[in-house]
Amino acid sequence: MTSTACFIIVSRNDIPIYEAEVGSAAKREDAAQLHQFILHAALDIVQDLAWTTSAMFLKAIDRFNDLVVSVYVTAGHILYIYRTDLHMS
Image 1 (tube, rainbow, N blue to C red):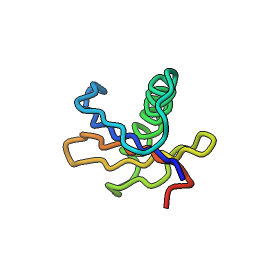
Image 2 (image 1 turned 90 degrees about the horizontal axis):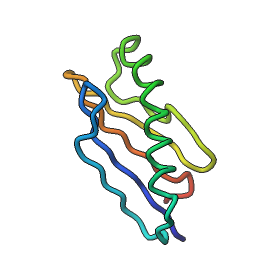
Image 3 (image 1 turned 90 degrees about the vertical axis):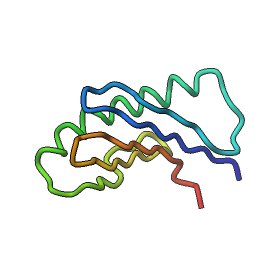
């Protein structure tokens, strides 16, 4: 089974600090843009949720096809965003 995961750290000013993609799926040219689109779309949801909940781990905040985005928000509002396939085991 092929699967990928994407991890990105975003500063409190929505500036990407670190980005990594891991997995066994073949790389496609448009995959990087798709992953960035999905993760940046999730930022809007995170900004709304981060101020209304005391939870630091926001599980499955966004879905796109077979991709799920989860976020860990630190006390300093640094975001650890993780995008993974639903089919990963």
